[in-house]
Image 1 (cartoon, rainbow, N blue to C red):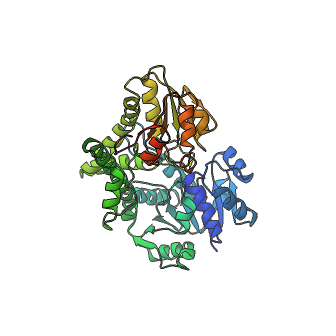
Image 2 (cartoon, rainbow, N blue to C red; image 1 turned 60 degrees about the vertical axis):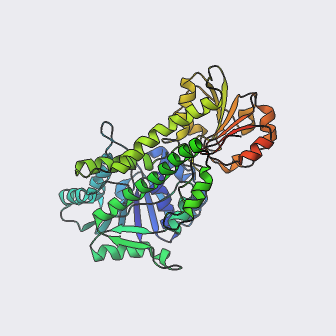
Image 3 (cartoon, helix red, strand yellow; image 1 turned 90 degrees about the vertical axis):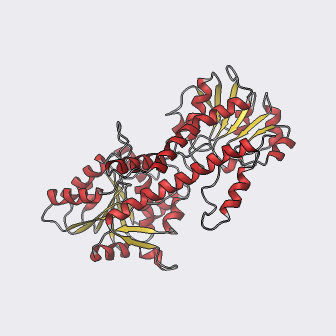
Length: 438
């Protein structure tokens, strides 16, 4: 067992802290927000992530997981301190805003009462670890504080399983003693499988995270553009995806055509990588094109709905199913639904919507939308129904009932979750992505 402190109880910090405690470590999660800490102590999660509330409750009850706003007491006796604060896009230039990271490092370095490893888990640009090391030397020159990088690769909606059964754990340090500390922390991962730990230099670890996200974002954008070509030439993008994904050099994942990527990682990380590349005069043209194509696609999907409705939507009602950027999360950050809805509203449409978990977050970023409590209420009296997020709750709708409820029997399926022939058999006109309409 090791004593671990997690700085930040956002998505990365809370999931990582809870999972480390489930490994048997003693974990203290520190956050400056007293309301968030008070809620966590009551077992109320600040985010929706399947299984997280039960995991936190079990480990808090066992005494392995606790929460505090007091950083000094939180890091007392800590052998490892993880920095998991936000790195949002900086206003004005798109670089990652590292102010929260550096502020946390200064406070931790000043508060530590003994030797420790300071590990950056936040997504940070190449070279950040060097600056963290410089700050530590400035603030606490006489303390034995080492610096490492350990980027996270958690998928929202599947984060706990990703943490406990990872493809890899990337640790950036050339110091063998630090590697020993991280090996001990992650030792439970090696008990039932070959070790998934990849040790690299610190700068390499920082770049791996950005390169991975940029590649996945590029893969999504590639298949979305192929979907547009499929519509133009009369091919089916789902069959194209299946055909190319069966090549193990390409793989099946992230080849599902849709309205574009969103979320807390891909948009800001691709932009930050682009800015880093510019600073080093090593331009990444493919990443640049990916960002531009994805930004354009989101509003294009709104125009696709308008076209399916005959080109004129002023005064008409559009029902939207799914608001979050992906299923099994309440995260609305850069969700394609935002651009789709705003495009419809700009054209004069009235929008009503339902999402199983994202309505409260959606209310913070969308205006003029009528939020309802189930898919059938959304369809009742609407002129079209649009599926934007592929929640499981939308995969087995009573399409006949939907057809009867809609004023105009039109389903626009931006995630291709329904076979066109099934929709047509229910009496609905169908418009998918990258395939013929029915």
